[in-house]
Image (cartoon, rainbow, N blue to C red; front, top):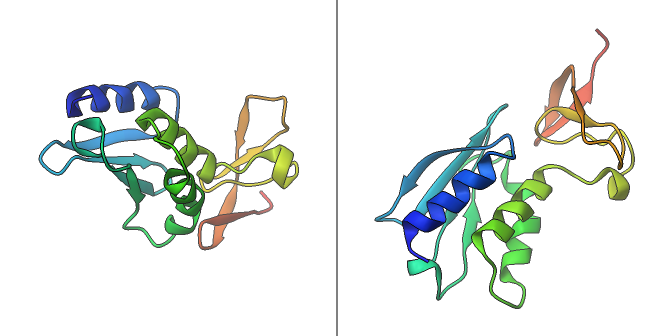
Length: 138
């Protein structure tokens, strides 16, 4: 798969997430993603979409701990598609309410309502450190 096809996959993925593809550098095989509030990461793509695996990283120290799950997934056995990598990154930033308990907060500042509910309510809160949010009284 050439870089333009990978960029198209990324754009399609962004349409169903809070992320935007803000840069796609074909010469560096790099795609940069951003979502409010200040969540950013980038993906280094293997040449021609094959060969070495993808690599995810962030220049934001607040985001790096969230990417560990995705990095572990990428380094596990088997080749991964860009879509699979992006989905794992998204899940890394949005802890599962089933695994983490209802009311678990994500780096996006949303409060998970429950495992069966798809809607999210904006969280009124303040940053409490390394990407976590605490609810404040309004």
